[in-house]
Length: 286
Ligand code: SF4
Image 1 (cartoon, rainbow, N blue to C red):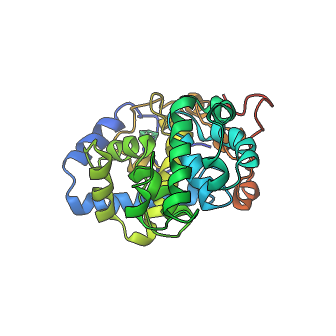
Image 2: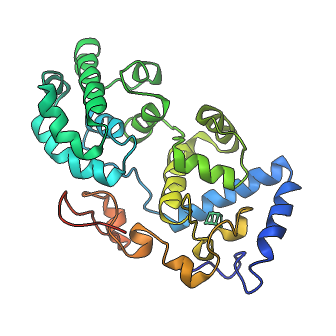
Image 3: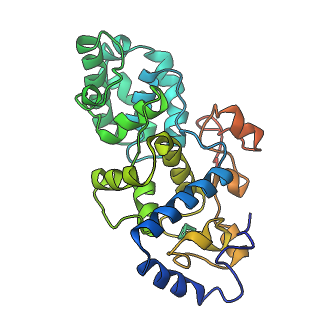
């Protein structure tokens, strides 16, 4: 994929980021809001199949997978959870797990001792305080061991249909690159972005932004020269601007590789995306 004809990418590419940055500095709040909404619309066209990248079949699985996803990739979590949920399909089963056996299963996700403690605490709290059901209110979810606002919003947005903005490392980095905010604190970022977009957009916006961060606008090497929203980005030029070199930086389906889910939604497969391989079946992406 290359940047569109109307993008900031061009033969004079070196000069354009400076102009774009100056323009962003002088931008009014209303101008920024309009540009942010354009970015969201453009991302909706680039990632019509955007979705949560954790495999899950019920809210308990989503909650557990989200806790496991700290400090690792969703791919690694997805490769680990089939064995985990086969062994402990319900909160009651997991609450009764032998800690060492649970640790062994989740070892591939890293920090497995701490994560096992979180899962045991979480499953026990679900069993004892919520009748074995995952609650659908943020004030209850954040009381569960190992569950913060981000995890609660993931569960609310993706299972309960409650709009939520999920500020993870990708989301924070991208919205700062786009000058929607300078805030570093995820709760403040969430509040700023909530003012820019109607609630109905929050969950899908979160998926689109994270998709873009994982595939194109990477932390260390953003692929600016292959970025379809370059014309709307004041940070164009922070990464590789040469279209051919930038193309090589693309990941997952944008680079022609498998995605992160072993069981992706049909919309992803229809768009040419490939499922991730199971654990030990070889690398899924560079
Ligand atoms: S890849 Fe470059 S141009 Fe695209 S959003 Fe990221 S910083 Fe902006």
